[in-house]
Amino acid sequence: MASRNLFLLPGDGIGPEAMAEVRKLIAYMNEHHGAGFQTDEGLVGGAAYDAHGAAISDADMAKAMACDAVLFGAVGGPKWDAVPYDVRPEAGLLRLRKDMELFANLRPAICYPALAASSSLKPEVVEGLDILIVRELTGGVYFGEPKTITDLGNGQKRAVDTQVYDTYEIERISAVAFELARTRRNEVCSMEKRNVMKSGVLWNEVVTATQKARFPDVKLSHMLADAGGMQLVRWPKQFDVIVTDNLFGDMLSDVAAMLTGSLGMLPSASLGAPDGKTGKRKALYEPVHGSAPDIAGKGIANPIAMIASFAMCMRYSFNMVAEADRLEAAIATTLDKGLRTGDIMSEGCTEVSTGEMGDAIMKAYADA
Ligand code: NAD
Ligand code: IPM
Ligand code: MN
Picture 1 (cartoon, rainbow, N blue to C red):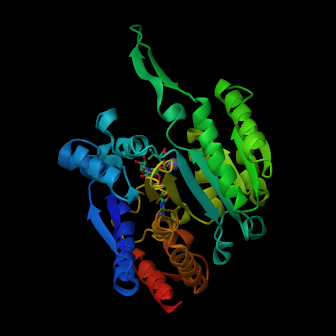
Picture 2: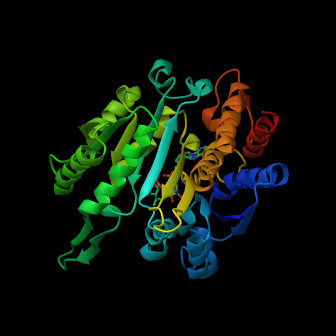
Picture 3: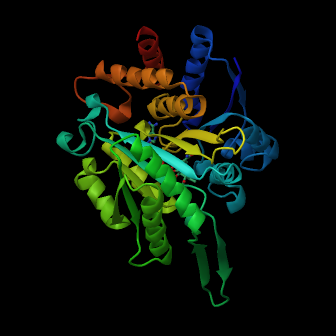
């Protein structure tokens, strides 16, 4: 069997703690299922800055470009608050996304049955929730030029970030959303702010045209992104797939995370376009959460977002659908048993460490 090359970038804060749990699963899959995962490991974020003075080295960047899939932990933290903007930890993640052309960010928000009571919303609002946010990841205000701070010389400065979208960028991300909707409830809601932004006008136009021309069978609706945020909290089960831009997608996915009980629950896949010859996509898998400096080093972080990101990796990069299903089921079983990290703890449950949660999920996987 062909080997499956994974490049691990644990990063900072709770990134390495969560990645340790995935490393155990990789070893298990190799030993018991002949999965053939080959791993290499690099530095990103503050860890890379401390070692090389850059948020990712060119050598590690080249490894990320060459592997089958990157598994990414988290970056950032107060230690690097004062480092220059271009080499701040987050710049490493942005470079990976841009250089690997990972334009499609899939952020599924699933409320596991056992966690309906852990959400800050009423259980009936989130029970059975299964939505997918498709976030555009290589354009918009994150990357648009100019991006500057200018001294105006009168004691004032001017900061400029630029929101830019071209037709092809909107077309390709909406096609991903429509294709995924076909495998689900077949409904896409597009969110932008066409009432105040030119990019919102174009976004709306291109999504509508793409649906008409290529996906007439998929139901499409539109919502202004601010109202979309409100509707996500009011009645999230009205949504199936949400497609939106880079910045709105960042914010809406953190909102969606809390519907599932914790930011520590949300995985993501960042995918490039399929290669014309091989059909393979460049891919990076990461939890939606950050380095959680407030709990880092304590062994209490929730590893489920990272583990579920590995399940997405098996599903999307290696077509290991049965294994991915089984790993997601093992997460559900473990939660059903009442095991909880602190962030999702509720009455009558047993509080466990990061490592204990990882071990329990692996055991549930093995026993399934
Ligand atoms: P954060 O996601 O790190 O933490 C927000 C809150 O959620 C914290 O209270 C944290 O303890 C909690 N939390 C997050 N993940 C958790 C988990 N797995 N288990 C339990 N609790 C968890 O966001 P922040 O505090 O705004 O940012 C901290 C740093 O992380 C910043 O430097 C930011 O830029 C960076 N960040 C990185 C990524 C990434 O690497 N993909 C994503 C978001 C933020
Ligand atoms: C995320 C993060 C990143 C983003 C940061 C760390 C660059 O918040 O992946 O959600 O803003 O995209
Ligand atoms: Mn974010």
